[in-house]
Length: 182
Image 1 (cartoon, rainbow, N blue to C red):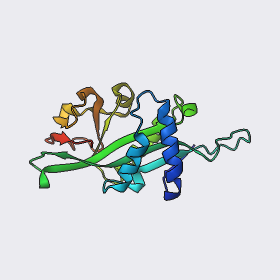
Image 2: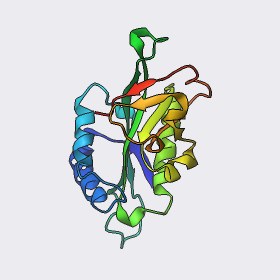
Image 3: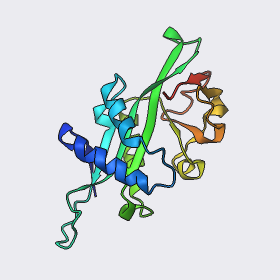
């Protein structure tokens, strides 16, 4: 599998891929493909942290070879109400969404995509990554409840599903506030 930065030429295929992948996903709101487009159209998009996984196998019988089989985005988001910071906010990253084709699930491809995105975010100097997801899945990457740091969310999503990962140990010490996922 090849993991690379998405390009503008990929956008139409990513839209259809994310739509199809979430039709059979464990959790889906049905609009994840539109959320991807929304992120790209606002000032929070980070092209270097929007990645695709390509099936690069050379098996002649593989009809998916060369196609997108995974997608992940990290975009900017802020914790608001942080009195110790300029503008009362602390910028972090949002991991959303992660899409893996149904034939590629439960084979480590999602983990590879998440790990690669976190590695790139850390190398770019970002402080932390927040997400809304299944704690049983994301704990393996080191994510913990954001409530542990006093971080709430405007949407009142249950604390156990709002998870955060420090990319530098201790970076969230003294940081608390509210995240708005809309």
